[in-house]
Structure formats: C-alpha cells, structure tokens
Picture 1 (spheres, rainbow, N blue to C red):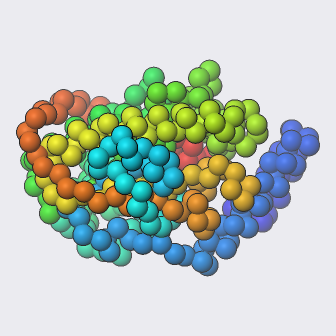
Picture 2 (spheres, one colour; picture 1 turned 135 degrees about the vertical axis):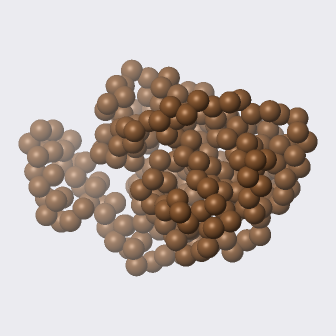
Length: 301
C-alpha cells in the first residue's frame, strides 16, 4: 500500500467510523513502518539448508506454542529456528524460488500456492484447498491433507515431499471463535479475525491461546498418523508464527521482522510406513472461489 492509498483509505474509514477509524488507520501505518524495515532486514533459515525427506509445514505455528506440547507427542521437541518470512505468501516465494524443486512433491492446504508457485517446476503439486474445504469450519481439515500426502508418497515415491497443513492457523477447528460471522465478511481487512478481536479486547488472551493450542493438537494428531504411513527423515516446522501483541502487533503481517513472529519449531524425527492406514478417497470438486477462500482465511481484504 502506498502512502497515497493509506491517506485515501484512512479518510474513508474516518468518515465512516470516526475515532475508531483514526485508531485503525494509525495501527495500519504502524504495521506499514515495520514492513518497510522488514523489506530491508531479512533473516532466517531455509528449510532446504537442512536434510529431510519429508517436510511438514504447520501454518502459523509459534515455537513457544509447540514447546507446550512436547510431553504429548514423541516427535515434538523444543528446538526452534527462524523462518525466512512472516507470512505464507512471503515464505513460499523465499523458500521455493531459489532452489530446484523438480523432485519435490508439494501437498498443500494453503491457497497462496496458486499465486506464488509454478507447478511446472515441481514433480507435482496437489492443491488440497481447491477441493477439500469444509464449509462448517471454513478451512481445510487436516485429515484431507494427511490422506493426500500419504497417497502421494506411496504412489509417486518423490525424492522429497512437502506437506503443508493449514492448522494451527485460524479458524481454530475445535473452537473457531468466530461463530455468527458471515463467511462473506470474515477476514475482511483482517477485521473479526481472532487476532483482531484480541487486539480490540473482545476476547481474552488466555482463551485465544487455549483455542490456538487445541488447534495445534488437532493437527499434530494428524501428523502422528502421517508419520506412521510415510518413510524417511522428517523435519516439522512452520512458515511463520503469530503475534499476540508483541510490539503492539497482532497476527502475521508480511515482511515484519519481529523475532517472536519468525521464531518457528524445528523438530527432526523419522517416519516409517507401517501400512496401517488406507487414505479416504477424496472427490476433487474444484473450488474456483479462491479470492473468497483467501478472505475467509484472513489473507485478503
């Protein structure tokens, strides 16, 4: 957003919302300042600098959230590193653009794949978000990603496979915390997202953290099943974290270099395909309303 755009949008917002509009515009300006810093100050580790056969990406997972569940999952530890990015779109470009991905299969619930990635550069890309969205929770359920990942691993036998879950990114499947909002307005300008509601004091931090953790446990239960049905060395990480008020910012704006946003899990383990699970067949009903889906996930205004 240019300064002229900000001035124009701010004027409209202030006319419509008065003092509240001033507050929102100043917050937007403040985040924009951080973005300007982040475009000049980049740091973080590429997943391709590590050795793995299977890469599991948990979308928007904070390292300290992950460290809370180390006693619940044997494949989770408190190790961390720093992501290349503070948002999914930024992470996809910085991660995949510089490397040869011709032997990589990518199974993803994140709809930015269509915008950022060139399918011709990969062994295969399975965009699960196109056909497996669950309208009741307005996100892509973890079991759909697990099923497609196992099937891809067994049928294609890629040299490397990347499995990108949508969780623990909101909406939180066990407790969405946005019930009653229309799908058309959810995520609009990131208003009414759980992070925006937290910023405005409409929900308590402890309540949000508990729901966020439950969503992480929900996806890790699926990762546990995955690890029993694929083979190889595994790295479990995240594309970015979330801010819950650090430096006055909430959520995960792109190009924001705050360490607590870019600090992500970095868990190494191994997997063995026991053949104990047969994936459910998935009907590929294409969902072409990608822009609406991005809004529903808080990525579009």
